[in-house]
Length: 423
Image (cartoon, rainbow, N blue to C red; front, side):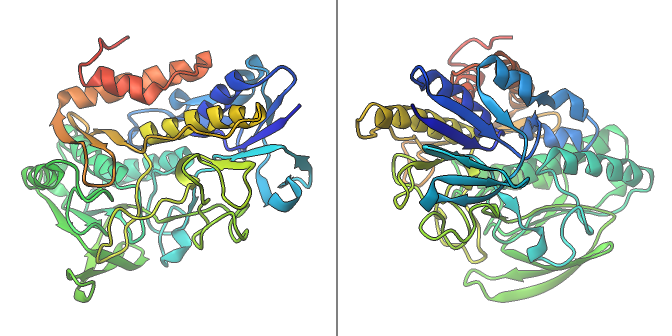
């Protein structure tokens, strides 16, 4: 019988555990290894950062959820993958043998690549619930003594949607507090234009986001590299279309949140044949590593090339819809191998996103995510704000219930009016 280990228990790891469990044969063993004992719903982090949600509202304890499904759980971080030995080394010194390894680690946040960046220095983050909780504390101090805001995503970032979300959520919160007139806002991004999103734009995302920013009096600097951050001051170089420096900016701020670039986690970074130079796991069309075919990967830790070359480096986002598609394909392919068959299932790498803007929102669908596309659609409205809230409740409920259905696909179809939204 086979032992399958999943490393990670986030938006990729938990659905992976549920779907893999449903595919196991009698006697097969499944174990989840994670550096935390709690699941948190990452898309809600922007709400936590302005105190619209409490951390406890978006977290679930992992052990009882996995125990109900007869899935082993070890809340200890992975230190190193030894693929040639089919062995996983843990941070506490233990080693686990596996027949199949599924990497769902998410990324490491590369704050250290820019001096002064990150919650340990001078800017805030919404990438993790602990960061968002700290950002909320700083936000309360900020609204007591408001000043300029600088927000956005640095060079090499691949997840731009949350930067736009948090910008709009802060702007909404300030309006509700009657403080917006006291807060100049500047959006700094490595994207070549607003609404690029790491996807070369989706539908009229460029025009619509530019319009939103004009209506909300938010200035923007695109093709930007953040050189360094000091207390209350950010130094940014703006580049032209050829990637040459065009203008230097010294931006004062009383509050700043900048999304960092991602890289692969330390447990896999530098393992020859397994990862690319940035530490992301290399996979074939069936989510399987070419050098080590008993290792699969899903989610943000997967290596995906940029959609296009941009003057300032940008990465490609991995949305929840895409991640769940990877999860389903991986579970089916491992079962195929267990049964002595070749894997044939492939993920549909489509990009779907619901972005809350505080009192309205924006949604986009890119099928496939790399142009040219069969569907390229972008829309805004209060319905997105409501759908995102429903999505949060729906997803957390399904995690509690141990569902194996594709939550993102289902909720997005419902939000778009194709199905009746289930409360």
